[in-house]
Amino acid sequence: MKNEIRNLRITRLRSDPSRAEVWFSVSPTFIDSATEIRGSLTGPRSPYAATVEVAYPLRQVSTQQPNPEELLVRVIVPEPCFWEPKAPFVYEARVELWQNGVLEDLARTNQGLRSIRLAQDGLKLNGQPLPIQGDARVDLNEEIARTLRQQGFNTVMCPMSDATAEVWKIAQKLGIFLLGADFGKIEDIRQAIKLRHYACSLGWLFLPEQLEMSLAAIPGWPAMMKENTLLGVELSVLPSQPLPTCVNVVACQESSFSALASLPYPKIILGPCTIPLESFRNHRILGYLE
Image (cartoon, rainbow, N blue to C red):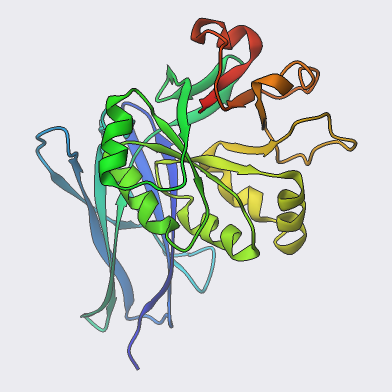
């Protein structure tokens, strides 16, 4: 019976200037004493810079795997080159499934290493302030992504669709953060879960009813998205009920900003924004999406 990789989960455990650590959880068709995971994380590479690539080997975490249906391996990259919109360095992960000394299956994926967090004074990317300067756009291809970067944009709000995966690959390669939006069906949530390990995944924006639907259908999904930082709702008036505890940002038109000022969440302005960039911190504004 041929052994195959049924699922691959990727977790960035650490990303700081001294080293980065990435874990790969591999679910094969079956596991026995002759099943092993090999491979490497090779890079960095970027479309905007010449680099010297190094292959860092994947290592088994321990002989006692926490999940009997998974094999867990990790890689450590010393002094990594971080992913960011200005310099989107990526590393190619090659995850190999070996059975009885024979290569049975192979998975490849590009990984961007970065550290991002939502602080009291705004977003911090690799320790530096990150004001969102974005575009609310339905279509994104390589030509449009390059044009947006040249215009100074670093983020695009992208509706979830059947083409979403390709958009994420373009954004990861060229250096554009993405905010997934327009979750019209449960499959869109499953798609977002699959895309969460992309360095370009900044977060997800919902209408209140869409968020309610997703939490009812897949109750634990927000806990899977911690790497993506932002989980927000789009509002125009004060909600009648407290927002779910997973929400950490509110998106609104500038015309609704004053009405929503009492909500204890940082804001993203949708549409034209006349508030000066230097005033964002005082108003707890993370940025705008035109």
